[in-house]
Image (tube, rainbow, N blue to C red):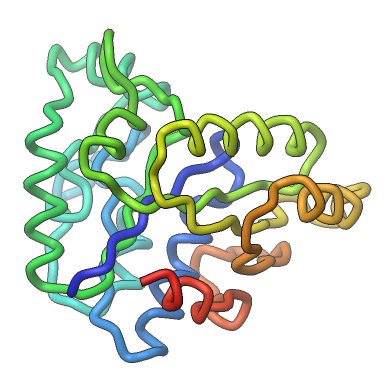
Length: 228
């Protein structure tokens, strides 16, 4: 049976890709065939192979099945802005059926698929729909990544409430340190542990070039395995 996870966050640039890579590493360490999926990525760079995003490449590097870039990131958008604006700039629309087909394809070659969202839970993908609408449509279990910085308590609690209202399987949260020596980060963590009422799957410290680092030891994969 293929296990699917959707990774959302309290904001952009708070560590979703780092957490996704950590989950992929932990899954591979536990013997799974694991693959990452970032359907929509804004701010891609043109290369000799086409438009590429660092996050998508990182997910490829941390997967252990044979895949090409377009399987990981079917919508590589050029403009470094919100996805619905970036796709509009290109005169296109984000089609949920393409996102779903990509998910199904990866699920056929791996038994652990980790899907990384863009921005936060309610990030728009079009004029009338958001990323969460697709997650609800696919009934994906959700993991919340919280960047431990000023403002994260309010952002995390609001996001958690919005996820709970969908009735999706809300598996837990991962704390990430996006800032080196961040003031009161430990206090933020303690406050969130008291208030979120969710399993804490791991705490990832600040690491220079964390996206390329060994991260699996910072997560407790057994909590996720028990949820299935």
